[in-house]
Structures are given as structure tokens and as C-alpha cells.
Length: 194
Image (cartoon, rainbow, N blue to C red; front, side, top):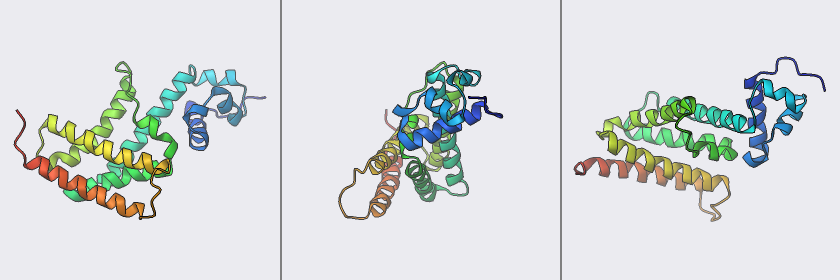
């Protein structure tokens, strides 16, 4: 096998994401990526240290993409509309890439500044959307966790075929968004906890 011209770290991660999208993260190996790239597996070591490094780069790309999706969804919107747009953006990303859910739930190594920064960027988008509700920092964190759990949980269940009843899943998601917005408003009206 001759080295593929133009192989870069970005290209290796692109190929890894294709494999994750097709077969899931458990099937990601350096040998499979090398085969897709048309190179021998040792050639990948010019671009990634090992499989763990490649998985980290995949997680980083997914988190960065999610931050971009959420930022785009929230731009020009406020309040209820911004919350709904965030939820739609998050769900839309996982509908398009259902096998990437694990990358969004992994807790980054505290020493991994790049991945921690990317994860923080996702949270910052949500914090900005929540700002009009008047939460202090701690309450913003609680609200962000709840939004994430609800939307990620819904999208994850949807991706795995967890909604078997005939009722319209899109309608269920609209109900979830309504409940989230109402819950945020109720939470905002409560006195700050002591």
C-alpha cells in the first residue's frame, strides 16, 4: 500500500467519523481507518498517537460541531424561541449522527484543555440562552444540566428506536420543548435557593 497523498490529521478524523457513523464507536480501529485511507496502519502514527488519541480527536470534533450547531440555532433568538431552537439543533444533530451520542456525554480529562474548552463552549451557548431567565451561575448550571438531560435523552431514545408507539414523535418533542420552557419559567420565578 502506498501512502495516500494529502493525508492529514483532519482527514484521519473525517474517516474515523465516517466509520463511527456507519458502524458505531466500538467498531473504530486504526486498522479500519487505515484501510479507508488506503495506507498501512503505521502511516496513521504521523497523524495520531494511538487509538485513544484518535477517539479523543473524534470526541473533540463532535463537541465542536455541536457548539457550532447550537450557536447557529440560537443566533437571533431569545427566550422561549431560543430554548426551542437549541433543542431542535441538538436533536437534529443526533438524528443526523445517532452514533455520536457517546462523544457528547464523555467527561473530558481535566488536563485536556482543548476538549475541556470545547465542552465549555457548548455550555456557554446554553448559558447565553438562559441569561434572560435571570438565573445566577449556579441555577444556570442546574438548568443547563436539565435541558441537556431531557433533549439528549429524548434524542438518544429516538436514535435507538426507543419510541415504539404510533403517536407522532415530532409532536412528542414539541411537548417536551413546551415543558422545558414552562419548567424554566417556573424555576426562574422561584426564590433563589439558600
